Image 1 (tube, rainbow, N blue to C red):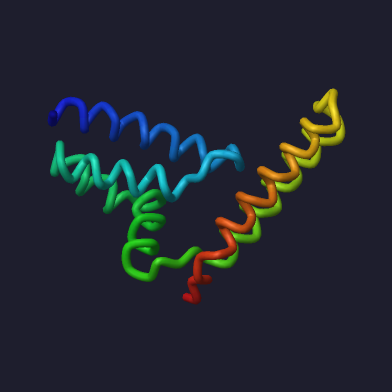
Image 2: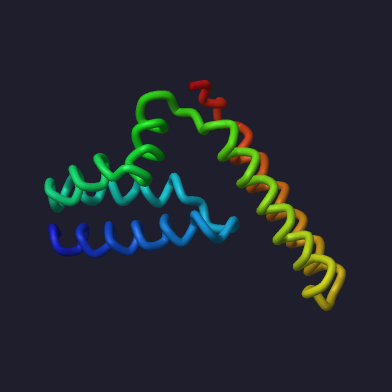
Length: 120
């Protein structure tokens, strides 16, 4: 099981890092999943992830405060809407595809905004 958890942790970590650049993929949930899987499979990778200067901050903030920094909320919601509105207006061939893109943007925005705002 350790190897399966390790493999899934690495996949989750890659998706989390990709999520930093692609607004449709959520970064924090994938990083939290990676931390959980690494905790069960590799103490060394778990410690590395938590002490990472950039990625560790996502996990520590969420573990300690269950909150997201305001800057992250603004950037995330803005990128989600820019990307999915572009898709709805210029990529979708049918009206229902545009509606799906808008519904996804709305759902992701609600999900991001429902977390408390971290005040540092």
